[in-house]
Length: 529
Ligand SMILES: [Cu+2]
Image 1 (cartoon, protein in one colour):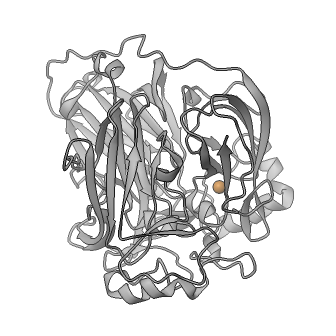
Image 2 (image 1 turned 30 degrees about the vertical axis):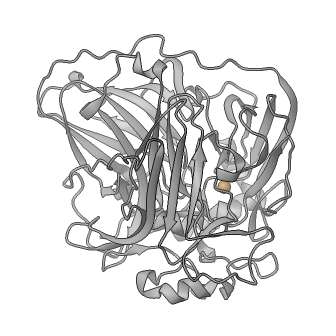
């Protein structure tokens, strides 16, 4: 199968991208349409299944080993993602996605991570209000047994031998969070191999709502991948690169010893990623909960969908076919004050949308397809719902959902410019410099952060939640509602957000959540003082 991929992708788009950087892109951005794709398309070599034939899997919910304590082992495992083929995954618990953690506000959780992979890892709870020492800093690594202390280590790099505990106070509102690897220089290939899963934070405010639950509440982690002929994940690794690499379990020695292979470096400018894919990597297979274009049977009732875009680079514009609406009840950081109805939802990498879809609008037997209208060809399909039968439904979406915190008065405005500088992706002209904060906001205050951009950059801020105030000086999009931690910043756009620095003092980060951009240095520290 040789899919066409999104419009403007392939060899043409790289030239288009360079054109954008050359200044021609101002016209592209200015005409309102422009290029919607944020990466380079990578085609699968494997035989792909017909869409909507594989049942939607639901990841297991993690069980604590003792009250408040969870343990998970990161390991290499085989999964049947494409029917009849084996894919080696690097998974939390050996699964992709990893288990779903259901946490409760006010009940602290400890996550013990054991690393049995051939490479170091760092686990970040995305959207978590987490103390800095448990936030998954990129050089704060859990290293596998026998991993050498490398002379090429980054300044300040910390190695936890094989195991460590991450402590999550969970003093935050009910929300759809997720967790994933955040290792310096290798986040993109390591998440691509499977190191991601979902977290649902619950609280009393949510409990009191008559929302769909149980079988009618579906966490849906959406991401794209490409596959080699034998079913293994296809990723455009740099040919010379030895770490985080294609060896898998058989490459144990290479993985552990190979860090000297030129992973990074301002001088050499070499990366784990093939240079042609600097824009980001997009696969041609859309996975939901790790299954290709799956199908789910639903009763003709309301269902709550926790949508997570866990893709490295791909943006989606979700639409229901032959028609239907999403009633958004929550954003990245929690429930909205009241529902907002959308015909389409555009999701950048890292963003989450908590929505209700009412399948009673369709007669039993209906097939409702979740489309991605930003892509033609196979990536234009996401998954399908088949309505089985009518059923009683005592759920509702009340006009008042929650009382989110109000907008505090900002104490200052700072600008962060996300841009390509030579062969790197930079913030305010800097490649990532661990330990060199670009800002020192005070705990308990709020600031306006102005995000400017030369390309598609989904900007993610750790710790601080924010509201989108304006896009290019105008009203934000309807889908920007609520408190968020990730915002879709488009080419030559200026996005103003109001960020609250609550929770903890210490070292945090902001970065682009296009994982290839992140690995190519588009990160910065900030320190809450
Ligand atoms: Cu970016």
